[in-house]
Image (cartoon, rainbow, N blue to C red; front, side):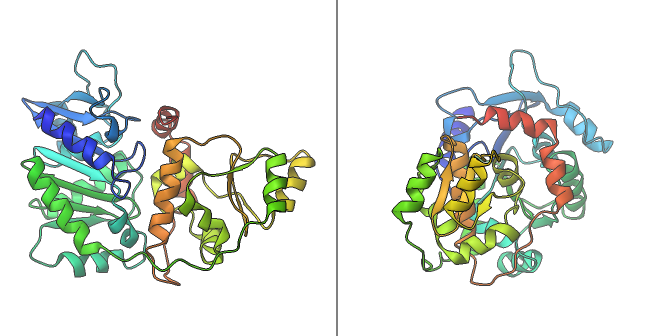
Length: 337
């Protein structure tokens, strides 16, 4: 079982439309043990390092039965890894295999106000699915998911608004088929490339003199050079948890290179990531593969939204709850790669 799961993790972990950075998790149940991806580990590294941690399944099910979703998973001896913050979510499903990913094609719909109607239209009455409104990952989400599963215990797919999708099955082949079918039903075209403003050498030079270089992800540059995307940054930045956890509560946006350079020269802050209208997206130091992946994911979600589509970002309270949570601070520290 482990070899099959490891193969699958490495496969989906290499697909940025399914998994980004340290996001997503996979588990399997075997001989009373729940094996789950450890917090901060990358699915893509499944064959290169030990990313799974064993926890006591009976303890988790006892906690679920008594609605104790704050119970700390009991790690079995021999592992120093920390279980995923979504461990309880995986224990809720009876299926031997459970996969949780932030599939872009589905996420595109989960950040819209009509998310539930969109799910209903695409999945239909002949499939076994459930959905939940947005809840903070961890205990809050697990509680909401239990309520949904109680109403429909046969569900093998769960859609989590402003978050992602969970699929369960008896085997890797079954879960893969279920997930692929769901993604295909939600698939939407990437819209035509919007008009962009060419970056001028003067702006690039000014920013370089002040320590900023373009983020080396071509698509991401459109977030600042294409007016249609730049306008989205201020109002629709915080669309789902990982984006907020790893890229911050709000974007640092500037109308021109001159604006940010003057701010720096006056002793103002020097954010690690800035969006300069018409010039591009810049970093003070290399952000690393993880943050590049989350930026690409954000672009991938926006680029699949029809023009003028209304989106539903997380609230200020949602954002504060994520950024002041020790479990997410641990993931931030672990995601330096």
